[in-house]
Image (cartoon, rainbow, N blue to C red; front, side, top):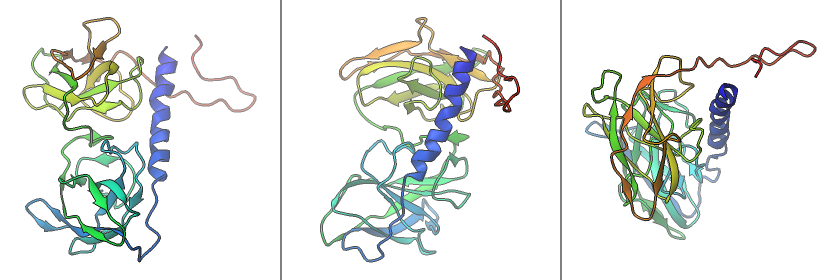
Length: 273
């Protein structure tokens, strides 16, 4: 079981990079339709070196490839992105790394166009101004989770001391094993430990939480699951909010170490089961 958990945790990281790599840059400098405007940092003014992304899904986390990515915005924040006519959800990001791809970390900037979605019409550039702000999470893979709706999961995360946990992430999975990238992710909890995760589709889900998000959990790291049933499971039917889904954090029980692939002709270093 431990080895299965290990590989399931490691593999999605590679899949995420492949998904990000599938996004492509605009090649046509003079298309006849798209979006244009200015990017600014909230309360600070124009933002240069920002990439603008066009998604066809409102759930625009980084596991969903974009249709197109703009060139970086100019020093005055202006940008232009050619798009074929259609409906798009627009997001802007500026990473400290300067790259248009990859994980988002504390210190990066991001913003969603408040009037999404945008309809691009033939022969016309729609004006789309976007404000970005600095992310305060420790390590974010899916910062743009669903932010509204009639269905979801609500509760409180408690620390090892029994008090509400500040800065905890709640992860909602479709996979019973609860490994790898979660299907939906909460924002970091505040001092009251309360969270809400909007879930756009009815179904069976599995819930866990941790203080750090990203990478393989380390032995002893604060981690917890919803434990009112042995499978850590909830079922959402129709427009339902599952309330009281509280999670108690405790030391993560495993010491997960990636097994070294054996050299040809040498025995495997993987533990026997």
